[in-house]
Structure formats: C-alpha cells, structure tokens
Image (cartoon, rainbow, N blue to C red; front, side, top):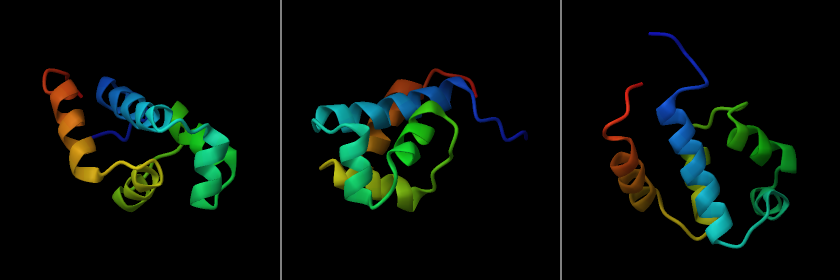
Length: 84
C-alpha cells in the first residue's frame, strides 16, 4: 500500500477539517495561535502538505469547538462511496 498524500478521501478529510475551522470563525492564524503553532502548520495540513495523527486532529477540532466523534461521523458519511 502506497503512502499517497493525495486521494479523494484525503481531500475530503482536509475539506472537512477546514470547514470546522471556518465554521468556528477562525482564520488559519487564529487556529495556529490556539495550537501554539505557526500559521504555516495549519496551511500545510489544509493543503495536504502535512499529515496529522489523531492527537493533532483532536487538538485542532477542540480548538475550533468541535469533537472527534462528530468529525469522524461526518467523514464516514461523505467518504462511504469514495475509493482510496
């Protein structure tokens, strides 16, 4: 199995993560400040240049007022018919 950074499922994942940030009314810089990171950190994962582990995803979601369970359910719903 290859470790591709670009696939339909990964794109949906990034779109959903960005949507959570935007729905919270946060800019990339705002979220980065809450995470104690540079703005480029958020930009990199939203563009697919950086992978996140579950802990980092949960931290980003919590900083936006979201939660991992709700996010995972949304992800499952929008990717159920997509091929990797």
